Image (cartoon, rainbow, N blue to C red; front, side):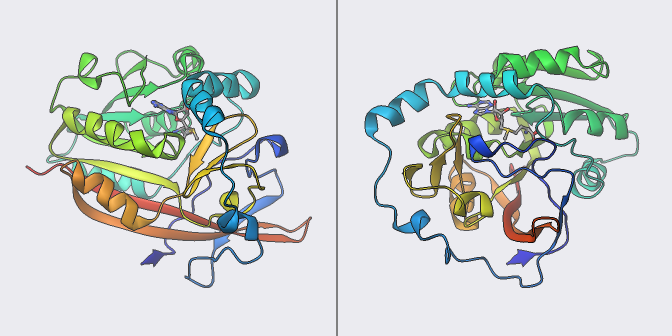
Length: 295
Ligand SMILES: C[S@@+](CC[C@H](N)C(=O)[O-])C[C@H]1O[C@@H](n2cnc3c(N)ncnc32)[C@H](O)[C@@H]1O
């Protein structure tokens, strides 16, 4: 079922037409979609009928260079690309709901934290948090540590490949109350997503949960990919070599339940990005879900 309750904006600030990213400049904004139906690929025939996939050789190279490509992304964009995620709705409410008693200090993991656009607003808003924050890109972690709000009493940032490095090397097993995966799993090869999800499972407390938000199938970012960018089903490469998967709720449900999680909620969030100046209105599709580790 699609939901219309939360405004999601996954990027902002810089228009990056060369990367195939859909960024909002100062004149774009998002509004709730009127029709709660998933958009079709009509008008973007290349997306579904493009049978030509990127060659196996190039695909292997992209996988090998995934970390380098994200690091170069942060070298080019520094901390300016993704908008600070000052969500006042889900994350903050969820954190409150996770507490068994008032003022309980929650242990959180932000998996794939980037440069901290979600991390720092959360720490600012909620004084009773300790957040482990990890990312693939050493440069992103460096930016997090250099941020004037970074404080080792409330945060530990470390570099980590979620599909390879054991989180238990940095975080005690069964110790995390809430983990977030915000536009991260889409950047990981579909064959390896389960490794990230299983890795997080080990550090979650029984009863702890994962809050997930990412691109949904037929999001505008998917429809605008040109022929030659398709890596596989619902999986595309941008010009800067970073990749993006577009999720269905069914896919996500299978991925998490196979790893032992139970689904709490799992739904599409539909929005329209409106650019009045350019007369554009495009469909945005996100998936927002919550899975928990059974007690
Ligand atoms: C679209 S960005 C989102 C960053 C951040 N979550 C936010 O919302 O601003 C995707 C992030 O996933 C990270 N990432 C990609 N693959 C990863 C992996 N295997 N392990 C850890 N992080 C990864 C990238 O370095 C990048 O910072």
